[in-house]
Amino acid sequence: MDHPHDAPPAPGAPPVPGNQATARGPRLRRKPPSVLRFLTRLDLTTVSIARREVVWMWTVVLIAAVTLVAVGWPVTASGYGTHPAAAMTFTIVHCAAAILAVRWPWAGLGASVVGALALMVVTADAAPQWPWPWPVTVLLAHCLTVFVLALRHTWYWAASLWSAGAMLTVLAPAVITHGADAHAVANGVVLVSLSGGIALVGIIIRLWILSMVRMEQVERLSAEETGRRRELEERNRIARELHDVVAHSMSVITVQASTARYRLPGLDDAVQQEFEEIAASSRRALGEMRGLLGILRGQDTAPTAPLPNLSDVAELVESTRASGAVITYVGTDTVVPDAVGLTAFRVVQEALSNALRHAPGSTIAVTITGDGHDLRVRVTNTAPARSEDPTPGARLGLAGIRERAAALGGTVTAGPTPDGGFELTATLPVVEDDHPLLT
Image (cartoon, rainbow, N blue to C red; front, side, top):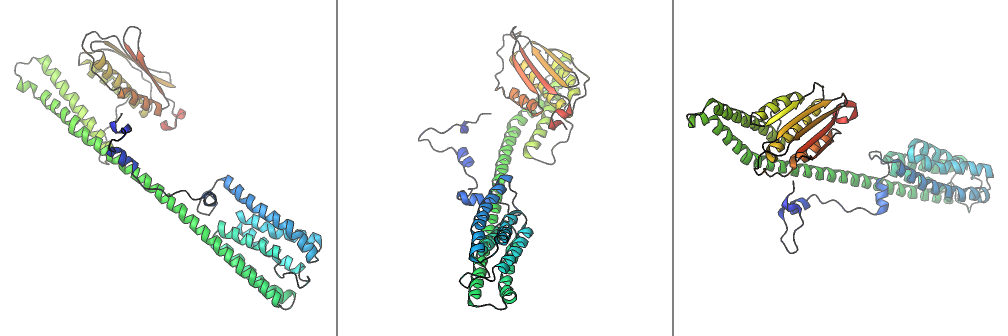
């Protein structure tokens, strides 16, 4: 229904409390810069990612690896005097380690160690002015792989590759050249320091991203919990209103109808029977009201009486006839799911209520047919036979049954007829496989 506080306040008017309550809520963090948003979408073991982000990560690493191959191959071949084929092969293997590390950390680690060791062997005879055992391009490729492992996977992968690089720094000069000079020591210190710093930076970035993701998840859950709490508060408010107003009035009707024969002596049998039926209808309405209140309040102790079904439509028609309405009813023996039967019952109930309110004295026809695939409910009434003013309504009942039918994949049409009456038709699918709600 429409609420007054849904409309925007007039200029200069004080803020509406309802709008303030709706506006307030858990304040979410501001979005990080675009680069950090990209990093948060990367696969960090505990974070699910889309294929698009994986492709982007591979693309960035691939560009860096190809650049290192394009520079390292000719430098290794010309500067270190290595055979071009060997320089190309070992450089590609070593640079490909970073690409493999994006998805397979063990493959990236292995390729990096093997490639680095091979390049150390083939460049060992270089002139003293060339860095060794870690040529510049080899050092950069090694650091790239370390960073990818630190950013994409658990910390021990990056720590393992850093340790392997440190071991190669110590063992390669001792085994290959039978001793390390000052240049080799300086080169090794640069490698260990630079790769260690890069590994530390990558691990810190990864942990920060994971903490941001978890924080966003907590804030999202908090927002959802706040929404559920507000919904429950609203439902409790509605339940209180129903209990205080509608349930009280229905209780008064029940008491008055039940005690009429004692308070009003001389009533004939027909009038007494009418009062008894009024009392029974009001008691039944009170029972349904209690069930509705239990549902609104979310109580586990809500009444568990069976909901009306298609077989209860005949009883509904008979109870409505008792009020003096002229009703013709044609039913069906079609077996339908409980959800369809309940919706059909509510459609007939709403149509009869509308006819009694808006067309007093009219003739009502209720027809229910089924073909094994769809259940069709058709309720028509003629023009009002009496000149009484119809009871006003908010047309919320029609909206409600349309929502019920739509939830089952059905449709509801309603409108006036050429003779001044009204017709309501509902088509509800019966086949359970046609809609997930019926399975």
